[in-house]
Length: 172
Image 1 (cartoon, helix red, strand yellow):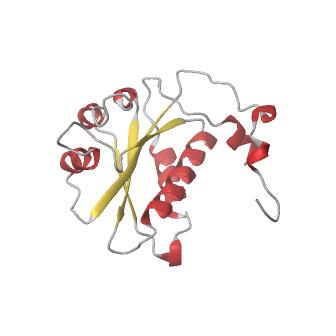
Image 2 (tube, rainbow, N blue to C red):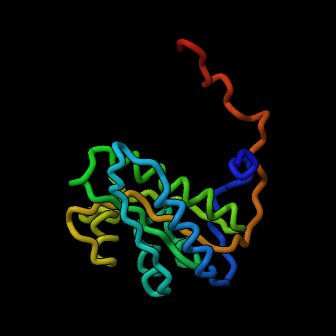
Image 3 (cartoon, rainbow, N blue to C red):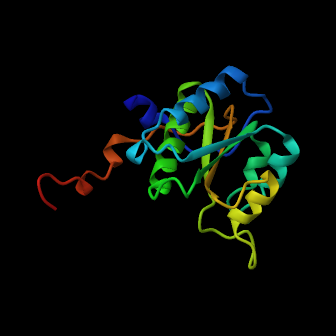
């Protein structure tokens, strides 16, 4: 697990290769196993493999989502906000679990933040995604995970560069 954390990097360039269904199933299963506040399990995952929808979703954020059009799939990570007041935390943990699972399966991923971001001056990124995917109003979107076979290599995190000064024991 520590090696996966060290070698997992945000991948924004993907091979033109479909992700096998068993790998997608494993990624989604890892999200479903993520812990949640009071066992509320408010998350909802929308797996998107349709190329036209991926292209449309790639416009969610002007500067930071274009690469989604080259991904084999996306997982939209959302939550039923009526079932939990810790939905942001719960969905964040699930998204991180899915990214680590994807990496463990030889896939790359990248988090595209949606919550509290804008599509344009009059439309939120959440509203844009919700319209494309017919998401009901009580479901909020946290992020989109792009997933696919990497077409770029990135170096592992260097342990010497970790910010150990941000670790405190027994007090700040």
